[in-house]
Image (tube, rainbow, N blue to C red):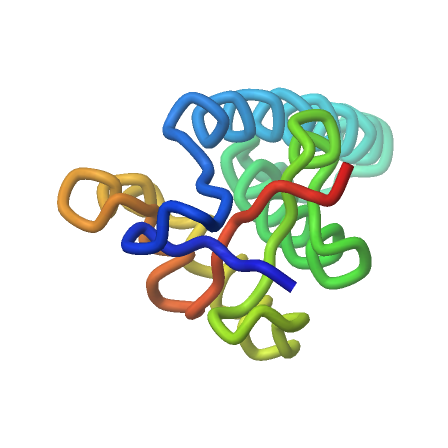
Length: 137
C-alpha cells in the first residue's frame, strides 16, 4: 500500500486544492447537520422550557463526531469520498482509534489548517501521524 510522502515523487500526493475542497464540502455537510440538530433542539427550548444552547456548540460537537465516526468507519468523510482520498497512518496501514481521536480533536480547533504554511500538511495530520492519499481507482 502506498502512502503520502513529499520526498518520494513516485508516491501519490494530495494537493492543497483537494484539501481545500475537502474542507469546504465537509464544512457544508457539518453545517447542515448541526443546523438541523440546533433547530430540532430549539423545538424543546420553545415548547418545553429547555435551556437554550448556542449554535456554535452544536457546530463544534458535530464537527468532532462527524470527523471521528466517518474516518473511523470508512477512513474518509463524504467530502473525501467525492474527491477520492482517504486517511492512512505513516506506516501505510489503517490508523488506530487513538490516531482518529487525535485527528478529530485537532481538526475541530480553529488553527488546524495553519500547519500548511510551514509543514505542507494540516496540523491534524501532523499530530495524529496520518496521511491523506488518493484511493485506488
